[in-house]
Length: 111
Length: 115
Image (tube, rainbow over all chains, first blue to last red; front, side, top):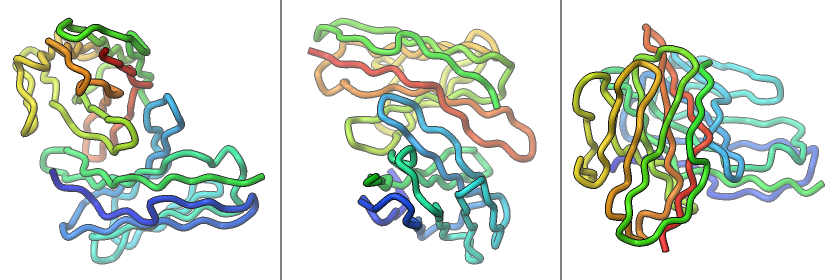
């Protein structure tokens, strides 16, 4: 099935560093979502973006909906050990609400 | 956001048997979905659970293998039938509450291992 191009695939950083990951698509989306999944858990919604150009923050997390509606990025500032996990982007097609998923970015934080 | 629970949280099953997974939501929701997440992979939509009618399956998934029920607006089940080791995955229930802006929220998942 269709998938988003999410990069990087994995990251290993030092505590306190900033992190950036992004997703791109050949298709236009009306909604971009960013989720985090901890081991053994379901994905948890971090940020939802509904308008092209929208920039939204949730604590140390900031995400943007690209102007072209074909991309989005997620930034994490001043990373901490509990940021460890897999981050997924997802694009949503309004007409049927089906989510198209990226392959995930695995984040490891060295204390 | 809705609070979603799944039962069982994990199970180990023998080849050829079937397992029914339950998804319970603490409020009425418009849409319920079932996903599969194979080890180290992203999420794959199995089907949309429709209240009072047959589920809508995605390409590659069929009702005989993954029968789904949704008797009301807060509950759904997914059965994994005639299991094989290839069915070992995390199965996730998700919901949306509808309206002009809706986002999907996920249950904790059911980790299935088939021997």
